[in-house]
Amino acid sequence: MSDNTGKTVLALLAGVAIGAGIGILFAPDKGTKTREKIKEGFDDKKDEFKDKFDGFTNTIKSKFASTKMDLESSFDDLVSNVDDKTEDVIATLEKKLQELKKAATTTQKQ
Image 1: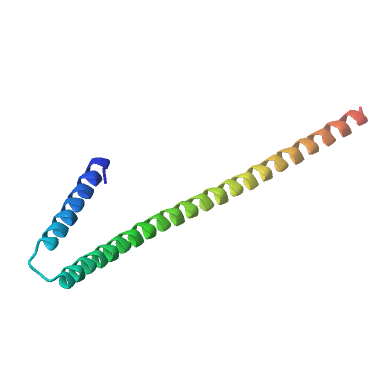
Image 2: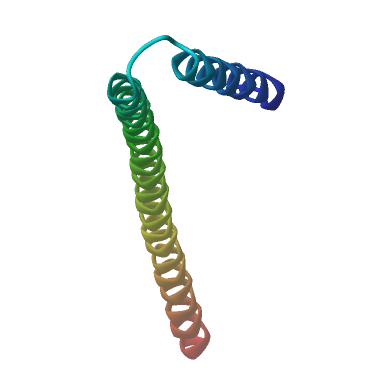
């Protein structure tokens, strides 16, 4: 969600909350009923906020889990590539050693 859209939604929600609060305060109900309505409205908003926060938290956790799995996979690939390169280097060194031994044997015979 873009920054402007988020600000617009937040301003809209704030306006609705303020309008609802003013409407309740000026309604022709008893004070106890008005306070009860205010408390219910507050509880509803608190629950709504908690649900949104939980959703946001779950989204962040899943993104971190995905990133962690990608990182672990990349690390495993790197280790595998290093193992392959190490084996190639060892094979090349063994081949060079055999060539040097063969050259040394040929030189000694001459």
